[in-house]
Length: 131
Image (cartoon, rainbow, N blue to C red):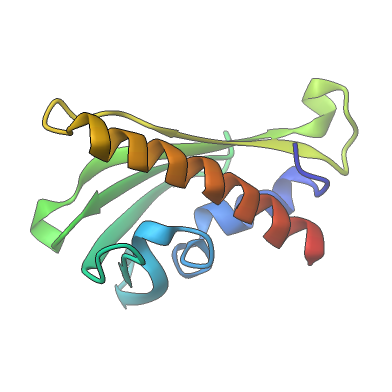
């Protein structure tokens, strides 16, 4: 739960450069071409490419991620649920971040991703509530 409106929260989830403020797997993002973003992993120092499929009507974003433009694949999604829908008020919302485990991921890699996404949720909340 975030103490900001769904519309405000959706902006940080749906804008590729702003996402680089909280996405540790591709921080310090730049837009390399329309709709394609590149950042740097804070863990490996390697470049990560990201594209976003934004559904403003549903307040949902699907994220394709990869080590190169050609290697990107759908991995994550976020959804913002307006507070009014949940009876918590229009000035609040719920932000979700989901990821799917690839069959090729080791247990250690999956555990790291799970921990990172949990921490990113705290970053998202902090960024939104201090603005």
